[in-house]
Amino acid sequence: MLRSMGMLDAFAARVAAGAQVRFRPAGSSMVPLIRSRQSVTVAPVDPTKLEVGDIVLARVAGTTYLHLVSAVDHANARVQISNNRGRVNGWTGHGRVFGICTAVEDVARPGAAAKTVKVGSSGE
Image 1 (spheres, rainbow, N blue to C red):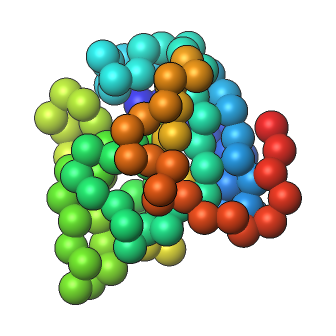
Image 2: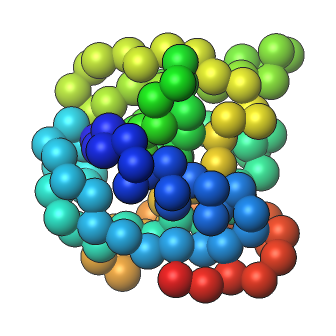
């Protein structure tokens, strides 16, 4: 969802530095999981715990997305990223998965909290 590069890149940098962030992405590629301008919370993630269906903030081929994990390749430490409409963005390494969406409109995403990591101070 959301390819507004500057905005997502800025949030990705904050999450990579250990912060939990909250923002309102725009776009329709993740409907109905995330609707345009809904509030999302993203926290640093342990990419080794990711599963198909998790929503992550990740960079694929130079673009940052808030999209789904559509496949997992543990042996090569990478995940496939796709939107919720069937478009595959591509594979990306664990080092380019910055965070996991833990809540949408303050409703917790099942299982996401157990995949977060505490890196440093959090903030919004």
